[in-house]
Length: 489
Ligand SMILES: Cc1ncc(COP(=O)(O)O)c(C=O)c1O
Image 1 (tube, rainbow, N blue to C red):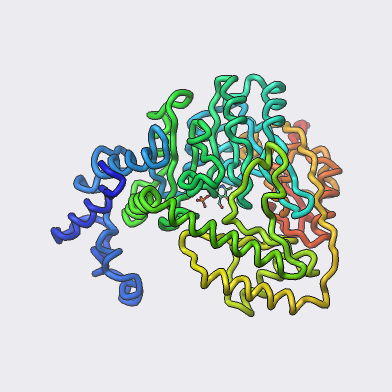
Image 2 (spheres, rainbow, N blue to C red):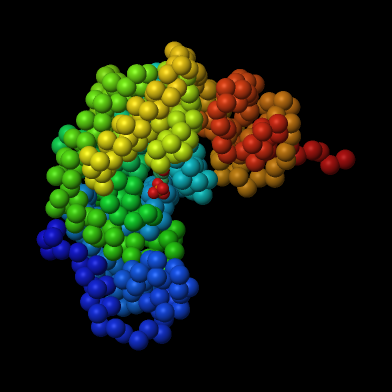
């Protein structure tokens, strides 16, 4: 088969054109049983391929036909031995990777700034996380990736680790020296699994960092929906044979996946793969060109700056993706959050994210010169508006200590718990996640012993106006801890 073909999309179209009388789910039956306003808005085309795993359409849980062919073409395009489609985003693919390589009591090396799906899978698997500090950027107040040196150190300290997870590239587009990390980890004969949520496009242009498969990693969970042109929720799990068992990966993915897989989502993956394989280079080339132009122009706007290649100085910041425009607004005397709100209300612009110091804008294969001009003009107006408040602000980026783990996150998750005032909780075992952004590093995860220093760190961040994420009590006056067993008298 050639990369020009879309076997799954074609089978869906062929099936729909036969106009079969449907006595199966979904009950809306090509939209006929659907709320008319919604039907009219989304259109009959998409509803006519909103089908289910009847024999002609293959089954994601046990692909033998069109889905198998579509996955094989994707594997060829991504340079993987096998590709699995995910209708549960990269979160589902990350959980599959982790549950495929570690079980109860196994140690897995992970960066501290992992996505919550990694921690969910660690709880479900019963594995023990060994955290590695990411490199922290004092200027922008963000976390980068981990360095090759810290991976070497972690493997020396924990030679019994069963796998290593790397985030590459980061949300902000910075990439580690992944090839070096893969070589170091493979020397210990254990797999490297990659959270590639923000890097579906990097394989398709040689100016971008190496993809996980190009670097020799064993698995990569890759959000096609984020930057690759497919529909929201669609991702791929790329697998290299050798240190992981492909059949196990397929069965774990099936365990975690709905039996009612969305065919519009799967078909959009098939078509996005064709577009990336056939036109990816040119489309991404244009996005890179637009990004470079945007970077140059934004850097000329008073009090704004964009993180660029000058930030590349270590194995943790080894390469970067210029299409991620991380704009520091702190010298304008406003927070990233204020900039986000200003752009929303005054320029009808929605950014990808904001934090205390920055906003992040993504330039993708969906952008043109027009959007770039609108962004640059809006940023110019924003800079003029806040000119009188402009000031040199200091970034507060302290990295909290990583507390000792007293029990596995899974045991902590299932233990009896109680809520207590945070001041009294020192020495108790935490039963919830507490994270502060930036730099996005969890301060406590379930199973860790609460320390005075980290409580101080949380308070300092709350006072600085940084949002705390995770705990039940967002004011953090109380915290959920593992209940201590009292003797029975
Ligand atoms: C670093 C990282 N990993 C994983 C994910 C999860 O991806 P998805 O939303 O496709 O489930 C995200 C989502 O933002 C992410 O930022």
